[in-house]
Image (cartoon, rainbow, N blue to C red; front, side, top):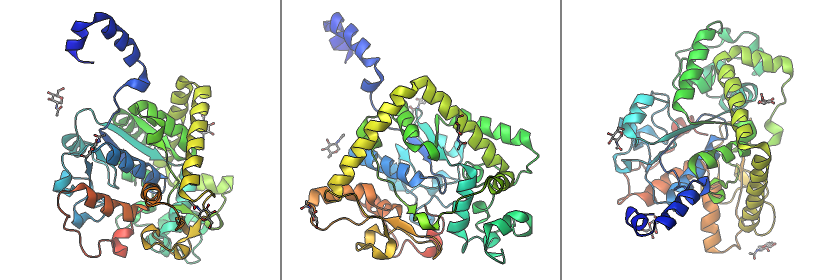
Length: 385
Ligand SMILES: *[C@@H]1O[C@H](CO)[C@@H](O)[C@H](O)[C@H]1NC(C)=O
Ligand SMILES: *[C@@H]1O[C@H](CO)[C@@H](O)[C@H](O)[C@H]1NC(C)=O
Ligand SMILES: *[C@@H]1O[C@H](CO)[C@@H](O)[C@H](O)[C@H]1NC(C)=O
Ligand SMILES: *[C@@H]1O[C@H](CO)[C@@H](O)[C@H](O)[C@H]1NC(C)=O
């Protein structure tokens, strides 16, 4: 409501104030940094942010071509890594190593910072399976078992070599912290947690993904449609392992800073959920899942979709990247008999990151960006997902 109208009608103005206090009617928040962490369901959040940006004509900062589809990770983020034609941005959501100072200079003042963490034991198991052929520390394990690695990690791990960040305190590294602090340095872990809390308005938790989205929706004054998603970049059930409590403990002992982060922010997530009211959160989660079911039905021709391995997916664009033969990353194929309009909508929900990014960048720019012929060599893809 404009000032002029308020002057014209005090009564309407007063009424609108009451109504606008309702969080659902606040303008949607559009300036967002999403720190995309590895192996945490972050691709799903990223693709949600891309869709939101597209619907609202927002500018998304993309990496310049020389950085691949990440901001020259694992280098510490610099504004120089941002494609000049995607500035000034509203949203930034591709992989990077966090750098608060550079982001604060790049982004608008009222930007909200968001990230997502995953339980360290299941996360490490996932990293081990995903990067077994790409991280030297994992390749050195003679029998290729995670258990063997955990017996004596320092026998295999060199902090400074390529891809070491996938082996030790990966969340901490992505957040800009020191992955190699000794486990005994509890003060560092506590300080780091406090720093993350100062900067980030919301730390989502993968294990409570839908609940985290409810908090996200409230934080940003978004509506249900804005947080609608189809899960991306999942592993086949058969390539997942269940972890014994003893093994989980070993993983946590190897990744102590990550474990600190996780425990702290899981607890704080539940405090926030309680503040919102667990009943109303449950209701929202239910609505979200109903909307999701409807979307999936529409996209997959009235039937629930079949998860497929990459080689079975007909459309090349929809094939997720396969890091190794040990891990089946599954995706979806679309039925051929759905309408073009539906297909376009659905593609936006199921496109793997590696296809979505350049297509979106393309549609977004006045002129085609100087993308390399083959922007996704296996070297660049090494850090995806
Ligand atoms: C986005 O831009 C298009 C084309 O310029 C316009 O039709 C549409 O209304 C805009 N949407 C929003 C939410 O601003
Ligand atoms: C950011 O905030 C400062 C002080 O609050 C203000 O002076 C400045 O104009 C703001 N910048 C933008 C881009 O909004
Ligand atoms: C997260 O925190 C809640 C509430 O404190 C707790 O019940 C739950 O076990 C925690 N989850 C994990 C995976 O640690
Ligand atoms: C597409 O084909 C499938 C089976 O082949 C059918 O179940 C579905 O109803 C069809 N969808 C449309 C929109 O025609």
